[in-house]
Image 1: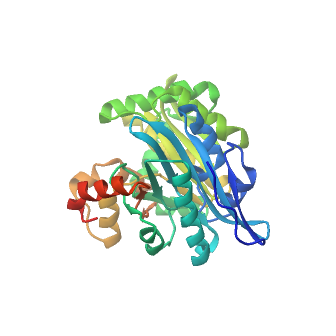
Image 2 (image 1 turned 90 degrees about the vertical axis):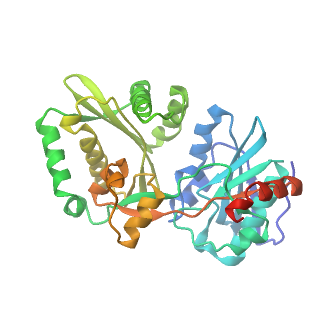
Length: 355
């Protein structure tokens, strides 16, 4: 595959296929738009499933000003690409955004993907024209997370506790009084934690993601050596009953995966695990704790100031609201289909959704 050369001697485009790119990761961690999903650490973790990174980094005077990481691999329907939480552009300067979007299109074509799914960073303010002008369409191929819940940690732990529900503070205290203890987990606990994830998914009639313990192990191996993975495990009477795996990147701690055996629910193990993770994040100097997902309709209801329905109050997202978190709507994902024929078929197929 080939990529265009930069046009200006003062700027450049670096193409990288490595799973170790410290300069790019450092740029991401210094940006309010940076996320672990765009990091080379994530590329390293996903390699176990056959995903290959293609990273294009734009520089100005030898300084990174933007770029993206695409993960791609061949599947049953052909080669697919994903750019999740990207592109990341410093200040989202329109001229740089335009160059980056053009680079996204060039990369999709150079890699001969059938389709490329793109979801911009959480706080991105990129307007639509650059995307639609280059042929991007609303994504109806793959489900993506469209809302999340975040806890502001900048005021310290006491400020977080003030925003928590009184009942949740009581449940956290009761968990300790009733024998729940939370300890840090290690590499030797990954298989156990995966079994807790599987237990949770079985109750919810869903499948764990990742779907194998070795894939979860690959994430741990990629992030933990640099201190960017933290596992919290709740124990009671000698049993490990609940856990939370957090990935840390930049100023944010993401509550990425959780699991619960279903036992000792009356002793509130999950509430204590959440609290201990938030407490650790504050003490470690992070500014944001991200629960990683929330029902979009529920988030919109809260942002409008409307009352939640009874079913919404029974959801896990309502439980996560107890920690003083606030809903955040995420940018819509889009799809780029290089083939004009397939793009027309896609338009026809989803015309009922007002493409």
